[in-house]
Image (cartoon, rainbow, N blue to C red):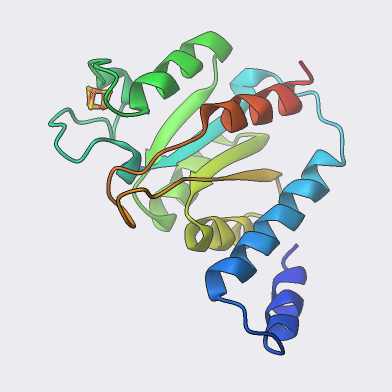
Length: 166
Ligand code: SF4
């Protein structure tokens, strides 16, 4: 996948296409490549990385260390992610940047990662991590970048089911 991104970038140089569109294509190719394979991991071997902007901007609860601190008011998707964590016994971490995401992966040694982020962060994450499969899930940004972003939880559940063969 590392080799594919420069090729896509080069081709896109000939057509009028935004950087985010290129990144989106790259992540879609990456996901299609992973979905074409078969895995049978335990859910405990997966980690879900989410960006901090999923948390409601006005919420005072500190979920960056532990999403279990969420009071489950339901305003943002942190409460849904916490339920998902309990339902599937997966690890869920808030990664406030690439450095922390790398540290979380090094510390936890997962067999696969489900990463939720914008096109730019997903692209750098997928290009960074080459030894384990990383499925990318785009967050939606109805309020603009980095504020009160959203996730389609069905996509995250689909990725968990795929990696655990359920
Ligand atoms: S769901 Fe949790 S993190 Fe989100 S606003 Fe409510 S208490 Fe805060």
